[in-house]
Length: 238
Image (cartoon, rainbow, N blue to C red; front, side, top):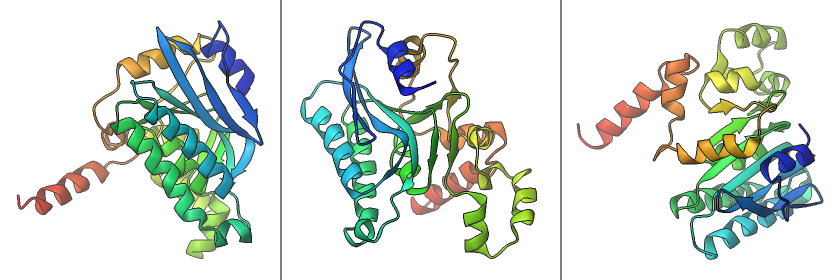
């Protein structure tokens, strides 16, 4: 689905969402209130300026008060790999965006990610994975790091990595693997109205992060939850 189709399905009565330089912002009537929209469209890389712009939109929603949910739309490239962005502290700006989304969620504004295109690396982490839960549409192509990049970092042959990726979801890119690890909570049905599906996700949100539980149940991260619980237990002196 295109961004226009998604917005039409979310807001059949109209909306005020706009796109400028690949950055998405606005809102629309939703379930008796409003749904705030921020995000990236058109496979746009996320640089310093974009990260700060999106963070400002999120914080404006928090400052307005209430409990307006925030939907983060994601169709991006990776972070913008330019010397300017790196010198201006791109890592800190991406972290600022992620922390703004965490602050919003903890301040009573449920945050839901919706990936409908591509996303990778820092842009994926600071947007889609910084929300309470992440939904996807069929055809989405998320990855924390693609296999050629993994090959360069690990010095392992690409063919070997491709073979390993077939049996190790936590290591591999792609929508199916993200579902298996629990990173993607659910894949939505594009043939049904999205406003009802997103509304149900908001209504059924757990109080905390359930990705480790989903990863264990789906077999994509079979030991992560147990290890995390053991670490917490030891830190508490258990």
